[in-house]
Length: 148
Image 1: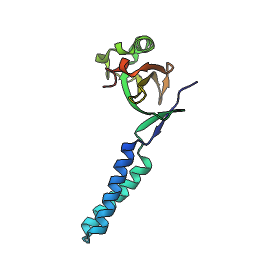
Image 2: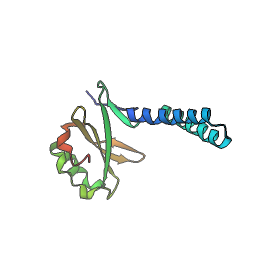
Image 3: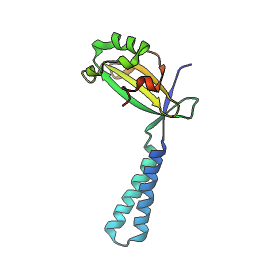
Image 4: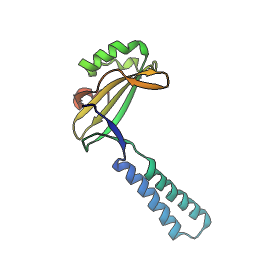
């Protein structure tokens, strides 16, 4: 089964959006000055737009646990060593080589609730990243230093 992660709204996204919208409505209702009403309309509008577009969490198809995503970039020359390390012992990835190029991207999806983490390597082919490895599932404790 191929693992698919989709972007979803987290509880934090919804709370931020609703707080902005409610505070904006309160400002509009309680104050009669034009400048405060403008700020209230702006806050309400911003809250509603954020409610529609802000999605900062991920969900694995078939589960309900929210996952967070971390991306780490490496130089293209490290492809074979990183692919081998991800398959066997991802905690041994050399982070001193991080951000010394952008030909490779390592995606880590992790959920503290489920205790699982998924890691995958992508290679940059002009205009997009294509996967080089399948998703590897690990215990979140094993990837501790990567997801700090």
